[in-house]
Image (cartoon, protein in one colour):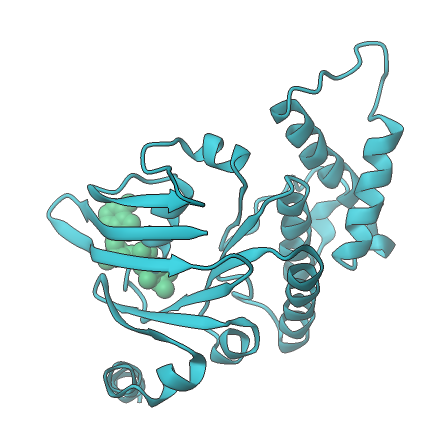
Length: 252
Ligand SMILES: Nc1ncnc2c1ncn2[C@@H]1O[C@H](COP(=O)(O)OP(=O)(O)OP(=O)(O)O)[C@@H](O)[C@H]1O
């Protein structure tokens, strides 16, 4: 589904990605882990098209998308959530979902009806269905500014799903969440993945979440791949253990 070959990325003199290659299969959940500054978010941005690699190639279902813009990648099926949820705080939950659905329709060339004030009934229906799928049906009328951190992330996920992605890219989906919010969002992600057959790529610091969600895990350090494999293989990998034990020792 996604294939990255020999990705290099520099910020000035700083070499942030040093030859990253990876393959993610259709329907697979693939996690990228590693210490702070390892280059996870940078790799993420290169794959979504927000940032351009200095060299290397990216393919989506065989098509070379290395030089395709971020918005054109969305049209090809990429959906992305951010470390800090990007929602419209001045609007209600329902309005946020409607805005995302209408954005997809515009992208698909659907023209808004000039004579109608407000959203079309089918858009409102779709927003309500989406709200149920992200377990926010009871919060439709709430202003997004009053939502908890976990609910904001959930709403952002709903807005991303409104774009009908084939690939869901999530940068630290549980960052800053309480344990119960974390548990809830993991369940929402699992359900969506199973219902829609989504391919998922995520970065995450919480190892329980990684272990719970991922088919395969890639460990990065200093812009390089240290290991790729199942969670069991990663846990047993000597180089990985050294990185994480080193981290624990530093924090001790
Ligand atoms: N726009 C930028 N300009 C200059 N340096 C940057 C830029 N973005 C990231 N970096 C540097 O690139 C390195 C990798 O950063 P990146 O955010 O990709 O790491 P990360 O693994 O996602 O870290 P974290 O877990 O803390 O989010 C860091 O040294 C960072 O300071």
